[in-house]
Image (cartoon, rainbow, N blue to C red):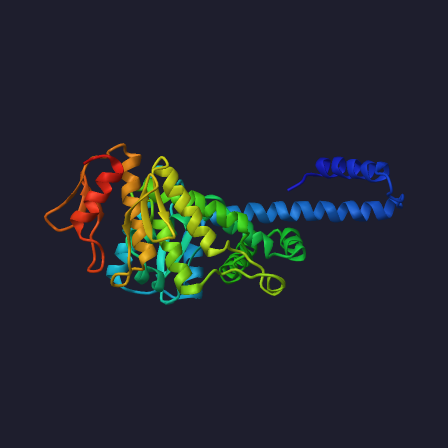
Amino acid sequence: MLNNSAKRLLGTSLTVLLLLMPGITPVSKAEASSFIQNLLYSAAAYGYVDWQLNNLNNNHQADMLTQTQKQTGVYKDDQMNKYVNNMAKRLMGNGIIKAHYEVYITPDKKFNAFCTVGHVIAVNRGAVEELNEDELAAVLGHEMAHGEHRDPVNGTQKIMGLGMAIDLYLNSNPNRTSQVLGVVAGNYVSNEVITLQEEWNADNAGFYNAVAAGYNPGGGAAAMARLRSELGELWQEGLSQVINPNNHPKTSDRVNNFAKHMTDYSNGHVTVKNDKVVQIDGKDVITLVKADTRLAEERAFLTAGNIARVYHDKAISAAYVGNDGSVYIGKQLIMTPADKDANARQIADKINAATGQR
C-alpha cells in the first residue's frame, strides 16, 4: 500500500509528465488531481489484490481445494486416487517442481485437467481412464508447470474488473478480500482465462517435468495425439476466432512440439514419421497399428520415447527379444508387439540394423 509521501511524489511526477508530453492539452489542477488520484487508486488496488492472491496461492491450499472440489465434484475411487496421487508425488520429487500440489479426480468423463490458485490440480476421470501412466504424467506435468509459472494467479487477475479491485482495496478487509478472491479464483476454473503463450510454456516445461521424473519422453506427444482423436484440433479459423477465441494451440502443433522435444532428448536420433512410423537416424524401424485401446499414434510415440531414453542415457546396445516376447535394449523395454505388428525378432533386427548393433 502506498504511504502519503509516496502518493505525493507519484502525484507530482505524473503532473509534470502530463504537462510535458507533446500533444497533451493542459488540464486544470482539479482535473489533474482527479486523474492522478484514479491512477493511484488503480495501482494501489491491483497491488493489494496481487498481494492477496499470492497469499491465497501460497498459504490457503486447503481452502482452495475445498472451493474447487465444490465446483467440480470428487470421484471417489480409492484405487484410482492412489494411482494419481502416487504419480503426483513422483512428479513433485523430480528436482524441478518447487510447490506442493494437491491433485484429485473429478467425476467428469471428458478429457481434461486444470490447475487453479492454491496449487490445486483437478484431473477428470475421463483423462485418467483413457491415458496410460506416461501420457497422464505428461498432462499432470503440464498442469504443474502452470502452477509454477503462476498462470492461475495471473488468469484470476484478468477476470477481475478494476471496479472490484478498487472496492476491495478501499474496504481493506483481508478476510472479505480473501473470500471474494476465492470465489473469483473458482470462476477461473470455468472461464479458463489463459493465453496461447502460457500454454506453450506449460507444454515445454511439462515435457521436462515428466521426463525428469522418469516417465516416457514420448508421453506428451502420445497424450496430445489421443486428445486430437477425441476432440479434434481445438482451433478456430477465420471469423470463428472472434466468437470463440483460441486459447490453446492447435492440437497437431502440440503433438509436433512434444515430438520435437523427444527427438532433441534423443540427441537427434529418434523421430516419428507421419505420427506412426518410428525412425532411427532417418531409417524406418517400426510401423505401428492400433492395438486394443491404444491408437497407432500413441503406440508410435511411446515406442519412440523408449528408444529416445536409451540414446539420451548413451546406453545403446543390441536389441533383443525377452522371455516375455517383448523387445528390449539393455534393461529398457522398447515395445510389446501386438497381433498385427511385425514379430518381435523382426523388430529387434530392424533396430539393430539402424543402430549398427548387429
